[in-house]
Length: 138
Image (cartoon, one colour):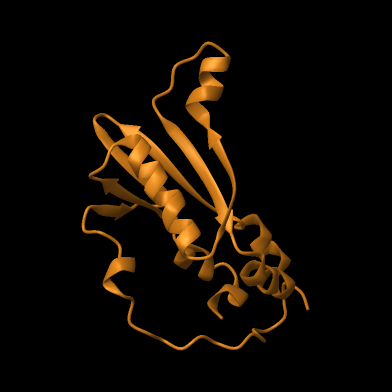
């Protein structure tokens, strides 16, 4: 199996996305496929709710990178900005077996950040990877 192999994984059935999983109205996708959602919560609560949501879905949080802390360590300023890295090897491994290039997309990442007085969450939607890798469509 490799990057040029056809999709051999069983396709998933189409289903309606439950309301709790739908993208909120205050969201946008930029020209490189980054989905950004505006949060009505504060920074710490937005970050905490993201981590909790990841865990509730049976995913593992592998790391959190606090860019603002790193900036302060070198005497620079940066508004709150934390990357949460998460995933599920049971799901990701078969995709990477099908097409190793998908490994650049995994594990998944979300950025919680501040812009002005608004708190946001951003990440690449899985749909942006599906057009690049046929195995991701399965």
